[in-house]
Amino acid sequence: MPQRSTESVDNYLKAILTLGERQPGRVASNALAAHLGVAPASVTNMLQKLAAAAAPFVEYERHRGVLLSPSGRRRALEIVRHHRLIETFLYEVLDYPIEELHEEAERLEHFISERFEERIAAKLGHPTTDPHGHAIPSLEGEMPPRSSMCLTDVSEGTFIVDSISDRDAPTLRSLQANGLTPGTKVRVTRSPSDSYSVRIGRSTTALDLSPEVAREVRILPLTK
Ligand SMILES: [Zn+2]
Image 1 (cartoon, helix red, strand yellow):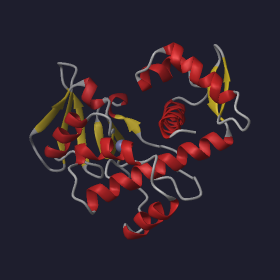
Image 2 (cartoon, rainbow, N blue to C red):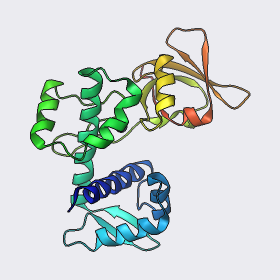
Image 3 (cartoon, protein in one colour):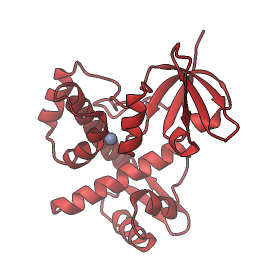
Image 4 (cartoon, helix red, strand yellow):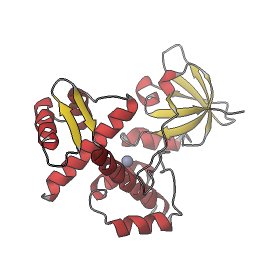
């Protein structure tokens, strides 16, 4: 297969994995089109092609949505592992700014060899999470289930920041500049303007997050 189409297959598999994690079960092709930013007709085309392959990566039925086959899930997890290891390497070893990690990793994830992947993992001490707080799948393709919740799913309380989505660079930059990073303790209240008011650590000043920004942040309940 020429490289461009491998890249695009990988991106489909990753998107199906991500959307399936958000809402277990079959992924609707419209949701996939929105996530990938492509026309629904191209999605249908691609899924039909993928499902018709000799060892298909997906199970697809029109109007019923799509599921990853065991080999599709393995491939998707491998690409996610590449992506998150590359992000960690760029951040910790090459000092890339947090908001530039994702775009660079999106390019490189399709092309690194198994040897390169192993070297990066060893150099970094076999990390289990990336700089955004996302779990890195193991070499065997295992990833712990997500137990975190979206900030928009809570009304108030004290939490630990679990992860921040890597998809929106300006949001990432501003949250990091304000000290909102994975592992920090936050106190959340809803403000009358419908935004989320977040106090970081012992700080007495609150950061106001719009619902759009709050949706990018996942949190865990504070244990103890
Ligand atoms: Zn990323």
